[in-house]
Amino acid sequence: MSSILFAIKDTIGFITLNRPEKFNAFNREMALLLQSTLDECKSDEIRCVYITGAGKAFCAGQDLAEVVDPNGPGMQRILSEHYNPIVTRIRELEKPVVAAVNGVAAGAGANLAICCDITVAAKSASFIQAFSKIGLVPDTGGSFFLPRLIGWQKAMALMMLGDKVPAEEAERMGMIYKYFEDGNFTEESSKLAATLAAMPTKALYLIKKELQWSSTHTVYEQLQNEDKLQQRAAQTDDYKEGVAAFLEKRQPVFKGK
Ligand code: LHQ
Image 1 (cartoon, rainbow, N blue to C red):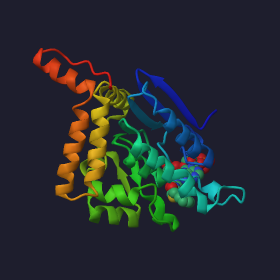
Image 2 (image 1 turned 180 degrees about the horizontal axis):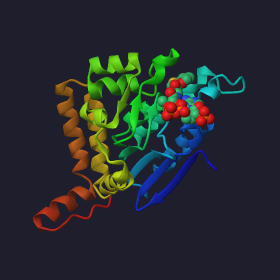
Image 3 (image 1 turned 90 degrees about the vertical axis):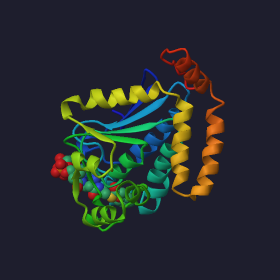
Image 4 (image 1 turned 135 degrees about the horizontal axis):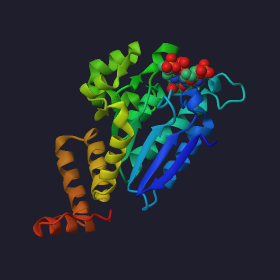
């Protein structure tokens, strides 16, 4: 069985981390396969990407057995060849990426979840910045995303203490968008992906870019950026359709073009 499952349904690319007996911990094979699968998601056929985990967990971070394996990739290659290219691909994909956190997300797994564009979780899921517990520092973009999501103080404490944060609390502190009851989780999170997939895909990508730029620009630069991105959005077919549908008092049909 492959460590990454991939299916395209109704223009959504469903990616499942699939090492359930290891709580979907990342080994090299899974990290490289996730990268190539994210590359497949560049296809225009896909208008939203949905990442979840098989079994009980979302992802327990790095497979710690691989770290001590003398035939393993070795510490020097894990970030540069595994996690950094994954985060970069998710940031650069020109469509929304949803993390559907079905169970525990720890270490690189927690930070994979929060580097996605919209993160939702099942009520029984939890998030652990597990790094400090084994003498490491946060990676997979966590030191960038977490303080921006929940503020410096909470991020520092969670990263130092490695507390387990239940989904409900993660929602309250702004780490994730929403949690859903376990029984409805798959249905509700898939519905969210379907809503995004039916929206003006290019505008959603430009929103992603706009927010990414906002964390590294001044307000004056950002006003220019908004102007630049708005000009691009206004050139899309979906913009024309959105305005026409409003004026004709009908539902718009967006094509992602
Ligand atoms: C695992 C793992 C795992 C292997 C559960 N590995 N088997 C970057 C640079 C280089 C090096 C290191 O890493 C990184 C990035 C990182 O991600 S560092 C952080 C690595 N992750 C962790 O430290 C988390 C380790 N796991 C845990 O703390 C717990 O397993 C959690 C809290 C995730 C879940 O706890 P429980 O619900 O009590 O489940 P469990 O501990 O019984 O785990 C279930 C199985 O999954 C178990 O296998 P077994 O054969 O005994 O049933 C675990 O060994 C296996 N597993 N995490 N990371």
